[in-house]
Length: 175
Image 1 (cartoon, rainbow, N blue to C red):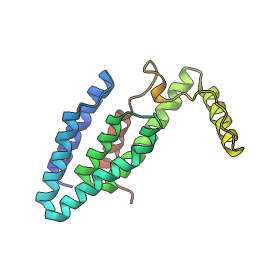
Image 2: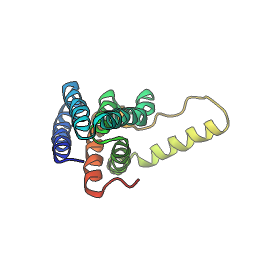
Image 3: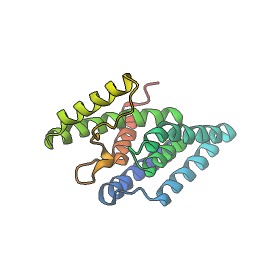
C-alpha cells in the first residue's frame, strides 16, 4: 500500500463522513474518482497484476454488500463505497474494512436502540422471525428496526465503512 493510496483513502473517508452524515448520500463522482485512482495506482505499481488486484477488490466489495442492499438494509452508495475501497486497496482490505465497519455499525445500533428504548422490541422481533423461519412459516413478522427504517435515528452505514477502513489502516488486515 503506497502513500498516495492511503492519502486517497483518508480523503475519501473524510468526504464520506461529510456527505453521508449530512445528506445521507455518497456522491457517484467520489466513487468514480476512488475507483479510477485504484485502477491507475495499482496498475502503475504492479502492472497487469495490480489491475487484476484492483478489479478483484472492486468485485469483492460489491459482493460483500450486495445481499444487504437487495434486502433493503443499506443504500447503493454504501455498496459502491466498499467496492471503490476494494478497488483502491484490494479484496482483503475491502473485507477487513467491512468487518471493522460492521463492528462500528453494530455498536452504534445497540447504542441507538438503548437510547430509544427499542433494543428489547428489536430482539423480540428478530427472535419471532427466526422462530417463523425455523417452522417454515412465511407469516408477516413485526418490523425490525434497521438503519433504513428511519433517518431520525439511523446511522449512515457509509460512515461505519469509513471507520472500518480507517481501522483497517491502523490495525491492518487480519487475513
